[in-house]
Image (cartoon, rainbow over the protein chains, first blue to last red):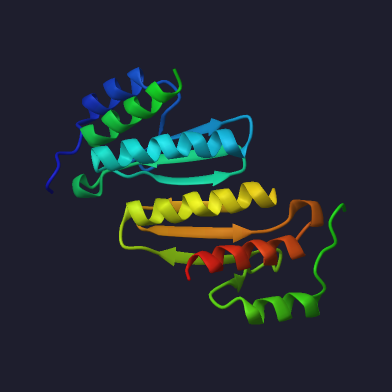
Length: 97
Length: 97
């Protein structure tokens, strides 16, 4: 694999610092749900996440229904979680102030 | 319900005109998958769809993974498909030129 997968210890430490994010059942991804006032606010957030994704060259799997956004982060080149996902989650959380 | 649901005939006629869209298994929504060159192109498309959604006050359920976008249209106030979904699908298709 081109990107090293997090060890279990690294993963647990990262999750302890990322409040709101949880480990997907299979342990290969982290996910978080966001709720906004309306679609405009939700899509504004998505646009900012898109800019982060493009600049980090690391893109989320995500969905939106009106004021709700669900984001899943995983690293295909690592076959699971990597430091890239932690960095992306931190940058996304920083948007929320 | 605030919005009239399409009759079966109306639904079939609308779908015949919307190439690429298919009826969801439960018959209550239409869906279409789009594929782009990369994330930048996919998110550019999503931004244009968001502007349509906001101006029509009718919002999709949708997801994105890198260069792929999946859009589902349904009308909660109709308990299924309405003319609003047809109008939204037509406007989205018009983006593709």
